[in-house]
Image (cartoon, rainbow, N blue to C red):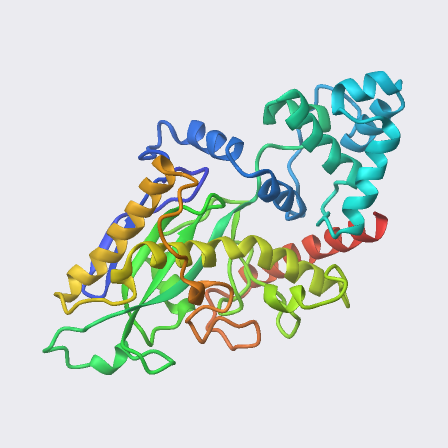
Length: 378
């Protein structure tokens, strides 16, 4: 994969199969930059808003063609005549502000450096004028890039070790089932960017990631993946705060839903909303391909290759049959997945420590503070 995404090398061993997949096309080093830009433009607006809130602490210097910030630009525009504002946004200035107030009251997630007027202005300009993302970024002075590349997590697939395997019990997971632990890298379009299949069901998620890094998996400097509490928090793998509310279902039960006890809870909620893309991808994958819930007694190497093949087919279907529902999503793979280690209160093995952990803590705290301060400002 490109340096703009993550650099991987194909690898395989007796206990691990690894492959790369592309949602739109095979990505080479020559067309990686074009692919990265195309992927950003095709993102859902909702995911785009969330990513704005997850901006990095050391945000990059933007190439500015004007001196007005995004907030200043929208406020200057709203000072225009009613007819001028209505031509751009299809709303009068009064109704523009009324819409923002109503969205805030209904719990629109805001954060980062964006005020509510910027959220509303970018969306209305997008739908009313058909403005490309590049123009919106110029007008509102925001970068097209997002520092979060996607999410990483593990899921369990039923497995049958070889009959002559002397350590069969290693495939028995925390729930007592014989499985293989499959780690996946999923982008914010719900496509599998990389898959590591074949690990024993008893293997901890963080161990699988650690060995994958040792085998060549890298993350571009200044970018990161979202992970759950089963992984250590570093500047490349951003985890939630431990001991704080995290799972989406817990936040949905609250009244009002946007009530947070502290800044860590707000961060955890935004993190969970974004990271849920990998849980949803697992649910769709297992819903589409029943073999992943009822594996047959094939040769074990074939079982691992089946998982990877299904992920490739998943991406192909997403590209050519987007929006068509021909299966029932597997609910067991959402939020609280079938991995008992998937919990922010669990004890995880370190992916890395020392400087990486310190940088991860500083990055997470910076994002937390930006989210909290923006919420208090709005």
